[in-house]
Amino acid sequence: MSQSASRWRLAAGIPALALFVAATPSATKGISYDFSMVTSNDAGKGKDMQMVGKGYVAGGNARIEFTNVNVPQMKAQGGPFADGAYILLKGDTKQFILVDTRQKQYSEMSQDQLMQMTSALTNLVKFEMTNVHIDAGRVQPDTTIDSYKTAHYHLNQTYHMKMSMAFIHQEGDVNASGDYYYAPQFADLVNPYMSSGWSASTNFFNNADYTNQLKAAAEKMPKGVPVLVVIHSANTDKKGKVVNGTTTMHTTNLVRGDIPASTFEIPAGYTKYVPPSQASAAQGASSQGAQADTAPKKKKHGLFHLPR
Image (cartoon, rainbow, N blue to C red; front, side, top):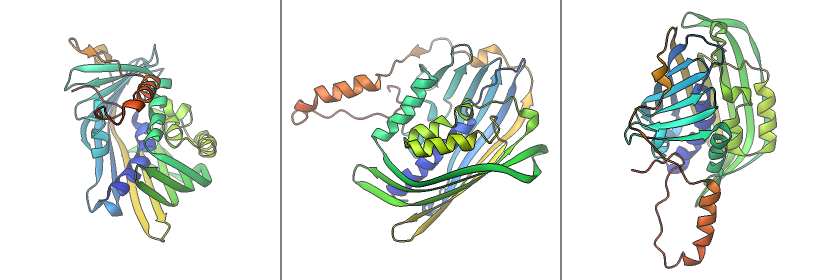
């Protein structure tokens, strides 16, 4: 699989990943659940991208842990996307805590900072989008998924995209069609990204037209976590070649019950890591620009990097 095709698949996966980060402000006990996200693509040569994990929500807090990550681009970022790592969302402070179990370290950030970090990806990958059309609506009849009665919604996106990263350039038409199935009995499994119009994806693409249309479409859909999502995409390049892909996200084994408070706490002995701010990093890069010809280049780390 080419690097360009791989990055295109990663771009498509960012909005989907946001659906699994959930928190419930009203649950007195809690809900635990399993999740999986699998992406297949014509250019993947049979190698699917897979992310598997488990989620917990209770008392306004949430934890999402990754038990198996078979997404090289995600694992390269380090931090919570490594096997065994997890993300905490503290309901009282609205803080996201990224916990690296291998290095026994953690870092904290607000939701705004997390959104800014997502936006920072556009410093590496440049997107230019035109001819954007996004809409969503209820599909009848409803259906049953894994014994849960669900409400079925359909979201369709079409746009023309130019994507550039270093010396790699891609251009083509994108058509993504997604079916989302929400179980009303778990409506309190609220997704903070949904409440802000799927902020992760809007920040990632950094396009006002796309942002406004996606937020408007999100307002037509439930704010909770769907038990099943199936997204089909077709990317047509300038030569007319079509690459089809499918992403399936499945939330299973939803169980209500008592969840220990320790689930949402940082383990004893873990040390805090404070990543340099984007502003500081940019300032440092600028001040070192004059020395670029003589100073050795430092290795660039991923956005979620915790020092090894």
